[in-house]
Length: 272
Image (cartoon, helix red, strand yellow):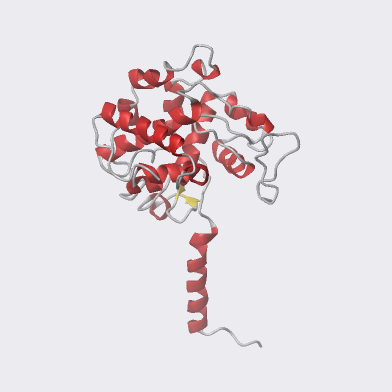
């Protein structure tokens, strides 16, 4: 009979596994009815939906808790259309993006703009729409300009393999890109993001859901660090550290304006 591991060895192995788990899954891509835990796992109950919950029907007092202002009370028709009306009538997004499609999508992400004070809630909404305004040209564009000519396929990613003839260029309010975003976003939302990435440019609710999926998995948790951290989370490799100060300044100016409209101080650390 082989020797059984001693209790000390078992405890050591369990501890090692526990330390490895958080690093194994940083982004959930959960179904809308599941919580994304602070370690990046999908599930229900306090372990997933409590403190540190990152997205989904969070209930705890952490970053994804349910404190904060109702989103629809801040994103009024006047505010939403105030952005969209700056785009020319010829824009594809003019009749595509609507306040109701945003609110329908936001209903699947109860942790959005929640978890901190009312002012923090308003700052997060301001930040989200500052990036949307910049990425879409005030909701003019549904798809990235000349996006079809660019290759956004990470062929080394075997979990979310690119499909022949499909383009993973920017689409939607936050211009989601790359196969490794389309795949898990589609899985979470309920469409085949790898085989049908075009869906993001065809259904406005799906478009806003992809933006909110990306936001809740990559941006929501850095809001306490200031608006500059959200720029870094979205496009830091191309814009931060002096790489594109014009784009950074544009995002910051939109954010300042929306904070002013919401009656809140924008806070510090605005640039990246």
